[in-house]
Length: 152
Image (cartoon, rainbow, N blue to C red; front, side):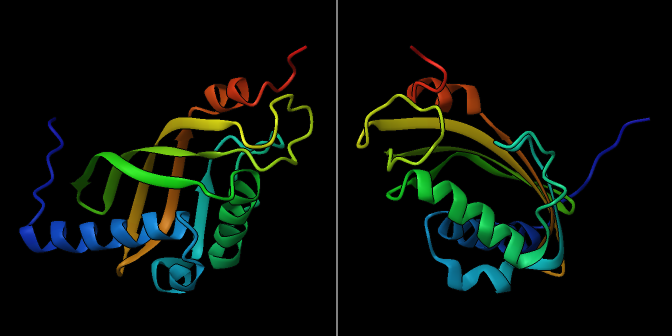
């Protein structure tokens, strides 16, 4: 059985507006978090601490995740390379993030100021114009290699 979803132009426009705000959040605009993140938001991701993301929930959890990432690379700038791809209540983007290492990652051998660039894919499930589920697939190995984690 084929599974096809028809996405209306209005739904695509709404998803595109939400993704624009999503990228702005990751670029440091914390003020919009309550508008776009559901209090019931769940995260599915391989975390730096070895967790699966289930401990990151709701608006404050997402703000904390963004803050954690930006503490390592304070000038981090995300841009969209592919998407948004809209399929029903799911939106997918492929992004690239660039910035300079700020320090603070245990085991990192890269000097503060090292330029980093890495990619990832976000899958978001949207209900009532808010993100209720977030799957993150980031190239953490590439980032950790650039930061020389475990090297030397």
